[in-house]
Image (tube, rainbow, N blue to C red; front, side, top):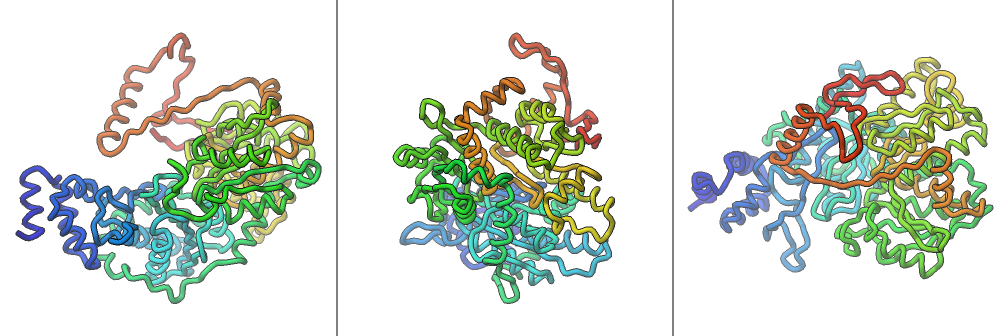
Length: 580
């Protein structure tokens, strides 16, 4: 009985979903490597129908920010794993997996959209792509495959000589005047996952109209167009090294507004990268600033398994446990941690009793908002009374304490939809408005930062700081995504300044509460996955719309906003895109 016969029989018996059978047939007829066909044969021969359904019931969703999925199956095949040690050697085959096939399909779609975008602008440039990758399984391979595909399609491709953080990719897109960027990462997801995150020419993740345009192009790529690109050819790909690192470090160092505070109060810090890319730049930034830095040796090396933690997520106490133990042994005052692609930062600080306590993303962001507004005024970058042309930019789901801080300092507060890409979109708008005021010869990134701040306040809006409750922070507009490396530096600066005042960080937070009001938030994560999960989310939304709640417990509902139906505008007067 052939593999095709077994698939037909299993489909007739209801063991395989119709979509699974259809996608299996498409993969089996495509020009795929021998190991891929062997893997399908093995799973079918085993009768692993559940695994086959998980792998093939749909094509991996390429959403508005890219795609993320498993690279290692729940039931790995012998062709996908090293028979000796069980280590993965090929990304798991399947239309719903992140593997060579689904990745190349995404690259082809992104290239086609970028080339069309340039042609419509009247540009004759070859599409230019920058690719970064983290420490995960297959990240380097996916980077090489992306670069090779882009080059063969007719573009220019730039790759790093080793794992690099997401914020460096965002910066490098702008620095290299590229048209698009990709990071191969799944942030702090489990080790079996990886992802393909897409950026556009401004260095921000894609937003309308580019996001839907890219999605449409990717979905239009047939499997028949993929086979020709599955063997990497790297001749002609440009490798980025020390020069690119130095350029990024130069702007990341500007996150410290007043480096003198490090000299006044020597700060003892424990830093952990939790096996990820944070050590590449966070360590040099902290050391150069003058911090006394200790590390967690067993978490310092890159390791795709993240073997010392349940989850490499710096939001979780468990992920910081080893760093906290080092801090207790060495008497350090602050613990700083980044996630695998170093776009998020979590921390612990000592209270007056000498105990280390974790801070939430809302608390960290609020501390930085207050400190940076205070410092900008002290340094004369913004007026002592504030400025209506200076802004804090945050997401709606981030604490309203930051709104109160902004109002108290006389600056406007812009709220965006969830996701740092919307904060980046506001920065792009501020940059474009200043460009129109200054004329075609104005060079935004080449203008000294302090001078640019003055010009933005005169002709546009100066971005003071931005954050989201999920531990993402961006100090300035040199790049357009949250930056865990810069966050480590600017939070260390805050800690040194607080220490110089004879306070603890929790005491400084209490000062903020007394000045602006007390806010307490908690987060409960509820996951609804797959088609059934999406249907449940839709039912919940429909229920709220049909029967709006009048109270939660004893607390009456004052006002209800429907972001999917209402026309809502931000503090700049711009309409916020409708989104459920």
